[in-house]
Length: 284
Image (cartoon, rainbow, N blue to C red):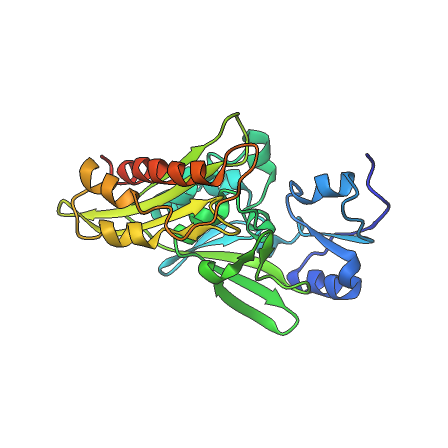
């Protein structure tokens, strides 16, 4: 199907993009990589009168180091971020996760910021951001504000970015020396996650000094498995310890039931995948 007619705007700065967004109001949509928006346009599930393309805004690109944080521009592509040496060194979990997003074509075009704002609970990027305690910098008419990953995901396909705002940066605290692993369960290649687990672990003197575990597609938003984290800290990263901790992975979750699996099946998977992810992140 062919999309309905719309005006196309390609601003050069964040300020120009915000002005265009304000002028367009409810009839404007933002285009980053396009992997979420373009299928919706082709199916005419949404018929905006204006498309605002962020691709020419230089300030939204790239990866940089700022003190104790790795800063990622909202329109940096999955592939660019995945391969960047700063990300590999200080946020290995994110690099590992992005390598499992779609296929090479998707990773070369899709953007990290676009995936986060789309807020699909079956998406991979948000779960890694949550596990890494990322912060999102959002620009709007009144200036910029920073929102933690915990507060960024509001509901099903709903983020904290307002209708008149733009996500401009993702700031990730350095996790230098932490191991990371993303364990994803799918039936066919390039499928959205049926269930997935992001784990990042810091092992010191033979014990787990710190751990972050987050779940994909186990509710309306990415979820932290805090009971698992608490059970791991201070313990040796042995298969027995990790198995016992992973048993609590599904606590407090409300996964969907669909053609890919019932809710109880997903809850079982969460425990299995958490065990695998934590052991891999700990290097066991």
